[in-house]
Amino acid sequence: MMTLEDLGYNNILEKFRIENNLNSFEIGRIIAEHKERYIVKTTQGEFEAEITGNMRFTAKSREDFPAVGDWVALTTYESDFAIIHKILPRFSIIKRQAVGQFGEIQIIATNIDYAFLVQAVDRDFNINRLERYLTICNSSKVSPIIVLSKIDLINEHRISEILENIKVRIKNVPIIAISNESQDGYDMINTTIEKGKTYCMLGSSGVGKSTLLNNLSGKTIMQTDTISHSTNKGRHVTSHRELIILENGGILVDNPGMREVGIVDSTSGLEITFDMIVILSQNCKFKDCTHTNEIGCSVLEAVEKGEIDKASYENYLKMEREKAHFESTVLEKRRKDKEFGKIVKNYKKDMNKNKY
Ligand SMILES: Nc1nc2c(ncn2[C@@H]2O[C@H](COP(=O)(O)OP(=O)(O)OP(=O)(O)O)[C@@H](O)[C@H]2O)c(=O)[nH]1
Ligand SMILES: [Mg+2]
Ligand SMILES: [Zn+2]
Image 1 (tube, protein in one colour):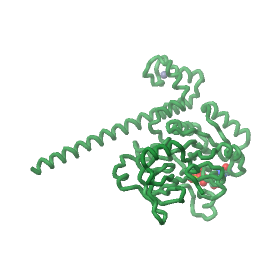
Image 2 (cartoon, protein in one colour; image 1 turned 90 degrees about the vertical axis):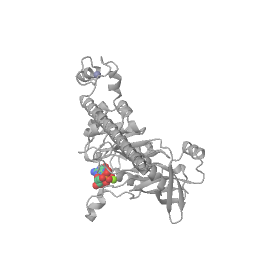
Image 3 (cartoon, helix red, strand yellow; image 1 turned 180 degrees about the vertical axis):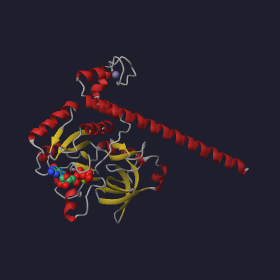
Image 4 (tube, protein in one colour; image 1 turned 90 degrees about the horizontal axis):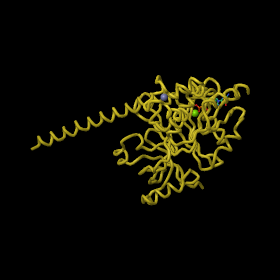
């Protein structure tokens, strides 16, 4: 029998459940989502679920809808159907800028403890992108673990070269090098994964996230690219998120590969990822230094002296600009929404006046 603890449930959630008188509901975790329909796992099994009309009606943004990883209070019915009444508080949310919709956010997963940042050591390898994922983790309260995949494709010399290059720019983040072919590095992954903790796989398409998940679970849960080659049905990339429980008790969320990783309100995220720059900037001559052309800028000095990696510094500036742009877009949107609200209100007032 599966307990809620097996799904990652903890004392804080239980306290919330009691304090909010949710006794009449069951508790479950969202393991998959397809266009506002959810699969929820409880101690009784898996249920297809929808949210209440009231929840939909009062939702102000994407964050008011359930996402994979969420804990929810629900009423279950026979025939595997359920209604979700409430989302329990999230301890972490991984989000990014929605592709093609500036100012909109997309939730990748919630209640995640650790994120595996998967990058293949072949063409996909890119430290700028790693720093981007790190920033997302740091602003999401999720601990990052770098996973370098496909090491069977390169020699040992190249592997140590890559590790060196990462360490110049990224400190204090564990790195695990693996091959899904030879299963080198799987021991490390297996000892890293803790019972009852939730791990999320982030990375580009084709880096081997689903292959890793399938191998760790010992079952073909997620379709991978390989299968499709034999059936000639085109590429079988992952199209949805899914949460699974491993035999060793770890909980894993697979994700579709991401082409763009847009930064959203990552103030603390950027500060944690580029902590060296933040520390140095306290010595800049001007309080509002942009670290681009000012006299007496400690950051620029450090870059010139080679104390800060130049590429890392440029990546930082790029993400800072992106963050600022995102924030101004959100503000602009809010202003427009407010204005529209006023127009509607005045219109209603006029309508009422005319009634009498
Ligand atoms: N040589 C080699 N090939 C791998 C490795 N891991 C995965 N592959 C292959 O890479 C392809 C893509 O693997 P997937 O696991 O589907 O990749 P994914 O990250 O889940 O991709 P999306 O679902 O699109 O995000 C498949 O053909 C795998 O067989 C590895 O470690 N070495
Ligand atoms: Mg996949
Ligand atoms: Zn400066």
